[in-house]
Image 1 (cartoon, rainbow, N blue to C red):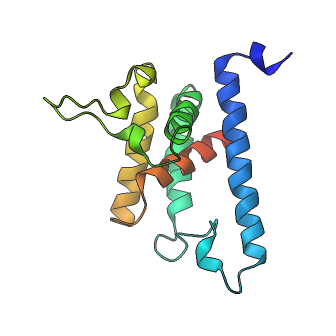
Image 2: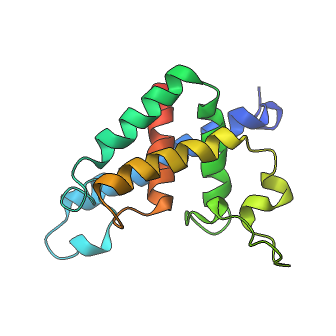
Length: 155
């Protein structure tokens, strides 16, 4: 079966796995050569000092949601894909339009209207829990990436 004949949701999962694998392999390669350029590379332990329990918090929130609603996993993976595909992972897909504004936020764009609300809800839940432990430290884009990685792990 060619990639052209795969369902859209399967393509999103494959692309997301490739992105995460690429990021992970880049982080591992960066860890090898840390003597001069450590600050220039992505690292898996970026929040280890500023929010040491970040991964456990996200894992707890996601595993609870996964038990209650496993369909949230593909919705969140799709949300991650929509956020990262065009201009890189920036969390912009999580922003709503301002009431009365003529500018349409990415979340309200036609392409994103079919993303189930549960995908946004899990990001908000995880962000709320993280903010209670580490206020103002972890970006929404990083929360989205961590939640997506956790769902891929659970799926």
